[in-house]
Image (cartoon, rainbow, N blue to C red; front, top):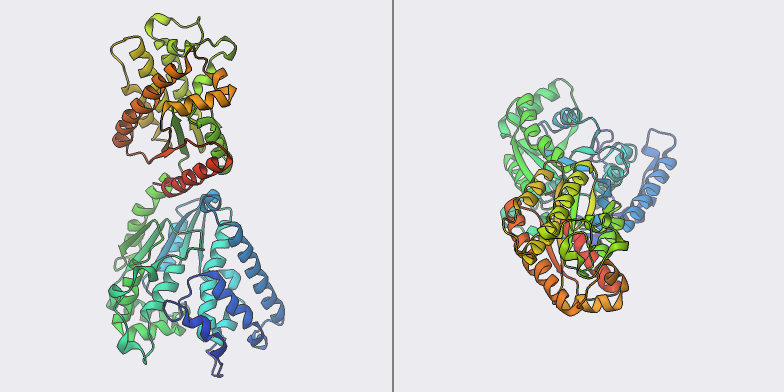
Length: 522
């Protein structure tokens, strides 16, 4: 993140005094931690830009376009305060980091070739190529602000591109690591060891919504790196011939160690992994492939978000709104779809399909449960997109167990439900959300307040039958959930949903969305 080789550093004396107030608030000198501070400095310094130094005769247009771009980035950031909305783009991002000469650019290009719908990019991005020399020429805290801003510009471009896999040559990790690791001659003697610095210094900025799924740090021996740099310079290759970091690293080998230490302390990417860059490019590429390819395949599998709970726990209401906010389909409870709403009778749920006729009542509704299990598996097989599904195999298992116990049936087969979930995991990731109630009285209250609950499940004695359902579909389901969640390592959220009204619904949804965002790619 150093000055462009296209323009020499300015010998003019600029006054950074007007910007020292902002600079003094930074956790580390030169390290910006958000968009607003950096962009405010650039806007304030706009009159200082030496447009006449640009070779392009349209220098004023270049400056105008740059600040228009910053306006668009700012608007984008203000609209993306909810991370779950932001990540609808479903991008898998690999950030490749390391010292100059470690092979970052080559690795990025070769990795990009492995994925058909992918993009190789870098910071600063090509869109900043024309304006970059002006900020390099200005130098000082304003150049630092520009390089910080370049991270947000890249995020904006990634969010708006069509590609699904993004391979990045340097991103915020470089901005942070190089800033905290380097000190000029005057301060080098009192530099703090990287290991002693606060974790907060290495955290990804809160207002950067996109973060790498994988941060690859190329670890390289200083002697190997220096030889590569010299070989490259000898052939006239690349900007490294003019890169001040080559000289700095050559004079101070400990600086390279500090930068690599800082890169490995970055917090924000889902994974930070090191690979041995001393090897040949083919061997380095193979290391990276073994990490990235399986992760990309897993990432792009669809997501099944299961909403379970006892009768009147809010599954339909929460599930419908959750799917709407995530922009995906909602699969209603299959039992409700398949039964004949016009044939429901009080207590019919004990016999399977809810009617007094149809399936053989002498086997505890087993025909009905067999039928539902088969239909649920068929619905799973047709699913190739993210969805929210109500009740699903877990809820169906609880209903099945309840009916068999009510009819004193033996040989209850619950394994088939777990096996069906396990099979679905081959093609989809699964997250389970249980809407829990504190007592059966919440069910009774909701049945009294909303006649649709009574229509959906007719009862002869609300209080008695709600107690039975509460025991079966919450208490017993708790045991089922514990067994399935532990056996299959499923992300699981249990959330109480006793309260009614829009405010309560929004609170529940926010908690679920936060959980989904955290675990949707686990």
